[in-house]
Length: 60
Length: 233
Image (cartoon, rainbow over the protein chains, first blue to last red):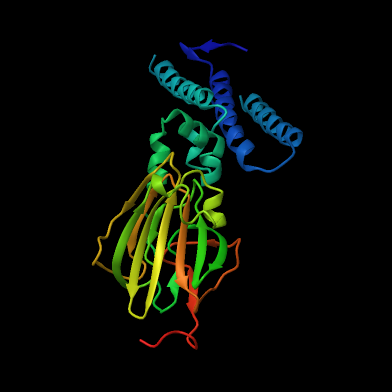
């Protein structure tokens, strides 16, 4: 996977960074609002994040 | 080049959000605060920490000082003078003391329960700490309360509203003056970081709600008049 292409950050990498930051902030919101056991909530957040990365990888 | 600049701008913005999140930890970051309900937006631990340091967050102050419009219904029954949790309805002598406890998240603007004229406004400050009123549970549990007692003359009935705060906060604003007329549900004053409002009514008025119920100033009917024993106007 290339980090740069055509003089800018490669789109898959850029998408993964933006997506990860948004998931990070969204996870904080979910963590405070959703009443679930901590382990279940952590697994859910992790699955959502990994699923998103997989989609980015497949699309690009 | 233009694409790279756009990407860097977006990534820098996101990095700023993450930094804000880290700085606010363990409390909610400014980014998600607006999406949270009040109790999660301003956790009690954070409020207590702010009170300890004396540095109140401007966002919390704005939230605390909110003064929403209330839909005051018509009628003769008495409305709740404050937002909060109905704690008790004690009786002593010929007076019924209805106690409302305010939390950090309640609106702190008090309203008149009924139409009338302000007779007196008493300030019961530090000298009150060991004096009259200590017998009541709502004062016994408090450390050196500072109070304003507003007596309202409503024709045949006379009621009083006590705004109680601790000696740490000790700031109570009362907006009307003695002799002023008040409409039902009109704004009376504000307790700044305060705690308790007590409504004193004659015995022929009955508390319409049970302790444990949340009430809203100017909207919730708190006291009903017992017309059979009410003095004639």
